[in-house]
Image (cartoon, rainbow, N blue to C red; front, side, top):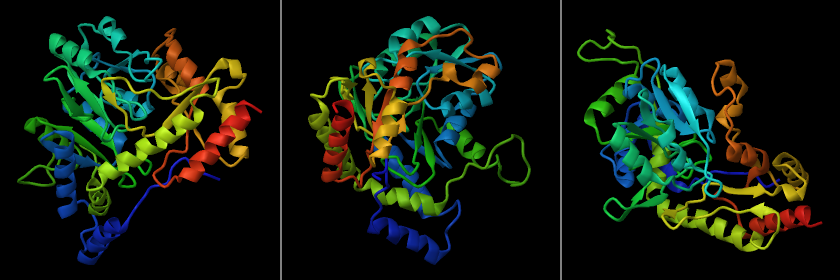
Length: 375
């Protein structure tokens, strides 16, 4: 079975982790945490990095930091992971949805303006499967309406967007008032589990650091004025991530090589839509997604089952927030329809895309896709 993803860990990761064990710095303090926070923030063009336990908690921390109140609204795409909606709901606010762009699968920025009300506090763009959101229109709206940008860059490590603001390429994670990352095992940079919040605002950074650490406050550690959480990252996890930053350029080259091979081998195959790269984007192809045409007579679930029987593992696309039973039970998104999200949730999946994938495996997978769609 060819897996969807396997992390690629090398000698430097082992060296750093061994150092943590040898010195006893295995918990949530140590030199690797500080260095990892600093290096990742610098790489993404931000001043402050706050390492946390995973990407979901990163979103929660970001939402907490902007003091959302009951009745406040945050606009986000329906096509995303539930962590995004969860962070908003947990912090007393209401998620407000827009559909996704049918080509990039990212937030349809043209729908955001009409969803802004007097209660809107923030916009949460989510870069999907390695392709950036079209950020300039959202930044314009944020300025015009005094809104916060909470940028979810969990799937876009190293991806870039060409902004007309300064006419320059900028990395994903640099656009948010608060920007969030995941370092789960399948991410481009991984710590196994882990995440980070980035910001240029020292006040927000201080608040985020307190919240991830149970709101301990000097000078009396166990006296609490606020309720926090234990969202700390360990020194061992940070050591694993830090070891990869030096080779991120090579990692991104491999991701793009995998995508280029898939695209060359599948581009003439009828009945599928392949990933795109808009002129203003530099896609990192975190996962190589496909959307099946309805003319194939198959849903992505049926397609995935057939590929699995032939030794190729896949993962389905996200199911839209407007179709999540648990959110409907909360009275959210009743009678709302986001047709692009609904369609690609039914027809989309991604192929094996991990860094350990070999050229021969890509050829085998592509051949299998051909056999299934053109028997």
